[in-house]
Image 1 (tube, rainbow, N blue to C red):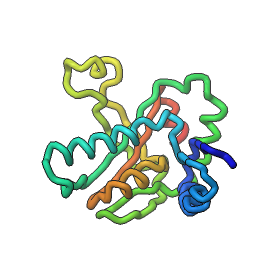
Image 2: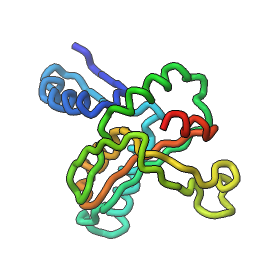
Image 3: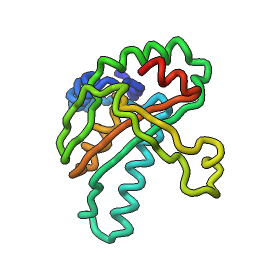
Image 4: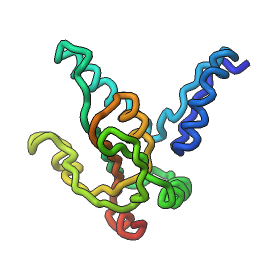
Length: 173
């Protein structure tokens, strides 16, 4: 058998199918890490860590996360041009897997719903000058559903993506 399986797949249909195979993988002795993330997936880990710390600091396991919002900004494509352009074009037709009022509610908003995000804590943060405030657009990254579902949020989840130079955002949207 295969002792360990890891992938970075994002489509929710694939993730749901892979999850449904959990018992088969266990029976075969395979540990599977699906949707590990391609950019590199660390935001999922950070979100879960923050939720755990909130529960610990509250002193109760009942501490719930209401809303969760993932916003990403990249400066260029890091040499992944053709692959990134393909992934971007595929994303436009994919429902964005978000939660609304604690319920998974996929929406056809990929590349829409622009919003401004402060990618810094305060003006003393180095990110204030390096990145600042940027516009992101709704995008079908799975963490808005996977992390929100695992945490059992009661409110809303979102994912947004923007890039530099800004002309790419304008052309692709």
